[in-house]
Structures are given as C-alpha cells and as structure tokens.
Length: 76
Image 1 (cartoon, rainbow, N blue to C red):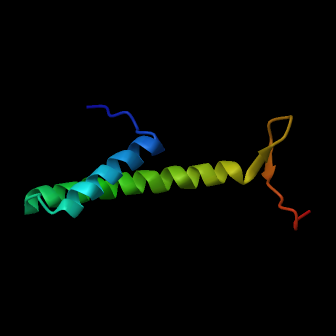
Image 2 (cartoon, rainbow, N blue to C red; image 1 turned 180 degrees about the vertical axis):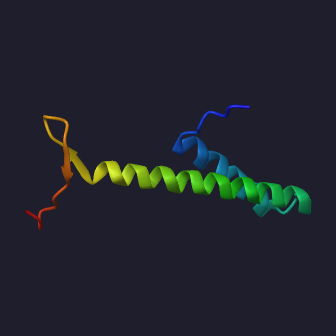
C-alpha cells in the first residue's frame, strides 16, 4: 500500500488529535500504545519536514541556479 506523505499541517493536526485522545485517558492500554506509536511517527515526520525547510531557508538561489549560504546582517 503506497501512502502519500502528509503535509506538515496535516501531521500536526493528527498529532494534536492523538494528544487530545491520550490526555482524556479513555483509551485502553493497547489503544494508548498504538496512538503513542502513531504519534511518534508523526512527530518524526514533522521534525524531518522542519529540518528540510530550514535547509531551504539557509540557502539563497542565485540567478544562475547555484546556491550560496544565506548571510545575516553580521556576516559578509
């Protein structure tokens, strides 16, 4: 089964729902473990997407398509 990668926002929404369910305390032990595992997968997905976004933000693409590190005001 091919699964489509979720967007950051979709993952966060699903993760928030899992947290809400776990905080309610109504889930059986087995369900709570499954929710926790699913939450850890979503958390890893969000972390990876944030790292990718950070890498994109720290590089400037020049007119010729080459990339160079993004310089802050203190760097030249």
